[in-house]
Amino acid sequence: MNKLERVRAAFEGREVDHVPVCMWKHVPREYWSDDDRFAEQQINSYRNTDVDFVKLSADKYFGWPSPVLQGISSAEDLYKIEPLGKYHPFIRGQINRTAKVIRGLKGECAALYLIFAPLSYLRLQIGYPLMMRFIRENPEAVKYACKLIAEDTKLLIDGIINTSGANGIFYSVQNGEENRFTEEEYAAWVKPSDIEVLDYANSLSDMNAIHFCAWEGIKNRLSVWRDYKTPVVSWSRYIDIYDIAEAKRQFGCTVWGGFDNRSGTLLYTGSREELERETHSLIQMGGKQGYILGADCSLHNELAEERIRIVADEAHRI
Image (cartoon, rainbow, N blue to C red; front, side):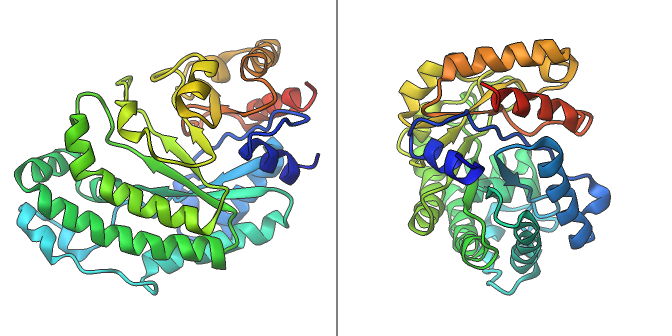
């Protein structure tokens, strides 16, 4: 199998010749203002690590850039948000930059682009304290804002897949921590916009992955995402479900993960022999069907790409 065949088989839950590997880091900030250099960083990282596919970064494009959100202090003001539209720099910039990366990959591997859930785009702009205050004070206003953000996010996804040429999206859903919302609150306030974006992405591609993002050691209430469907789930093994077989059982699809992404853990400190041994152990647990080797989340820039290459090389030998 080549990389495209291997990853397609993994997404479809078929047996592979070697377990595919994909881990990722953020692109350093000094490259954010130059699309050519940014794209070069992502392409070089792929070649340096020899992973089987790439998760493309959305660095620079995090918080939702509505002027209304600048200095906002009242939830009621969320009703003033207007759509960005497909020609807004926030949307066109991501599409154009991603196209540069895709061209540089030359069809050698699949590429998934990071998309945040609508409430996360809002939170990345205004911060957790205001997000939580607004949703408690006026959940309908927050739902309104998330609905508008979802509509624009669909325009972004359309461009990322149909114009840039990405194979699908890496959909990061957040705000599911057990201490944040009850299951009923999440279903009423957060899920509608989450699902609107996910359903649209699934209408365009069958190679989307969902990332159940975990924070600061706090477990997610995984039940809030039980009917979020993609072929692959990227989950936090070291926070939510440690046992890979159990993750497969709970999510009912191919699972992606294995290594702890946090600084000071094995991936950062282990010897070559320890990394190779852990790679063997993870593949033995995950098997060659329904498993992709990765990490809980983004890796820190302090991690030398050579260490990812050790894992990828070993996985390709097994």
